[in-house]
Amino acid sequence: MGKTGAESGGLADDRALLGRTSTAERVADILRTRIAEGFFRPGTRLSEDSIGGALGVSRNTLREAFRLLTHERLLVHELNRGVFVRVLAVEDVVDIYRTRRLVERAVVHDLGEPPFLLDGLVRAVTAGERDARAGDWKGVSTANIHFHRELVALAGSDRMDELMRGVLAELRLVFHIVDDPRALHEPYLLRNREILDALGAGERVKAERLLVEYLDDSRDQLVQVYAHVMESGPVTADD
Image 1 (spheres, rainbow, N blue to C red):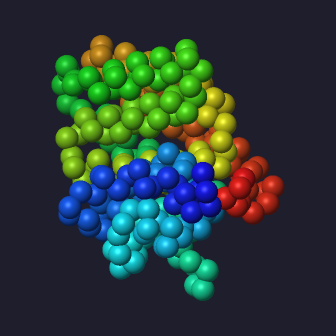
Image 2: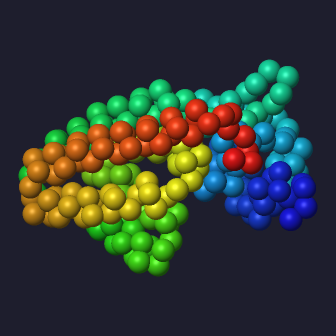
């Protein structure tokens, strides 16, 4: 891939997704997905010329998309330097887990009477177990994100869904820096299954307890690993 293609993250292939109604929101959707997938890693400077040319959008449209993603805390604008994919601080990771604990626990606590609609959770757990058998640990990471999104979706709240989408997108910035998906996610495959089984059996209180323990353990593990990485030196796009 040439320099221009590398700087644009191969976005020329995504131009068709914009269709005839090229809007800042659609551009933001594409960039958000690319950031989540690791095409643009934390610390990467986003080139207006390369990305705008690849997507065939105006500079104003692209800048509005950057503004939207900055509001979502995925990008940061540095004066006289440009726009970069955000590098989170350790304190951000702690706050993300505080938010997750409040939201996810509340969803399970307020589920009401069983049976619960668990099809999305079943698909996420099954996908994670399948990817683990194949040694696809990035796939396991994606399946784990889907598990928690589907868990929150049980509340039937668009606002909660939107909140969780943003929180988990920020969390992926951390995963891209640690870049050891097996160590991060393998221990939680069985625990996802245990939460699903408890909900399937109608044991909401047990599922809530398992979830809280899960999130606390995950927070402690990730904070420890991430703090070590951040102490090793500044994060750049080549890390």
